[in-house]
Length: 69
Image (cartoon, rainbow, N blue to C red):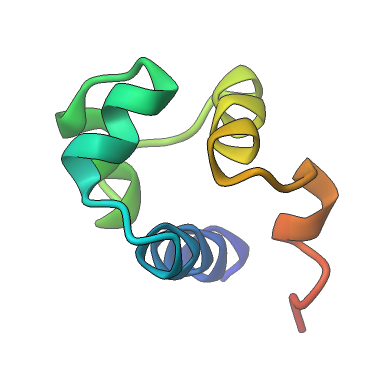
């Protein structure tokens, strides 16, 4: 449940920032297949990559989870 919600939240934030999966992957320094896999639930995320994603979206890591219910 948490991972599904979190993955959807990351996707929504990425789209709000006007970033494609490709541009997002480039900014983070990860492969586009990794980003796609995360968003579609085929990949697990490493804690170090959560930080990279937060930096790319210009948000603190804790903000990913503030609206989780």
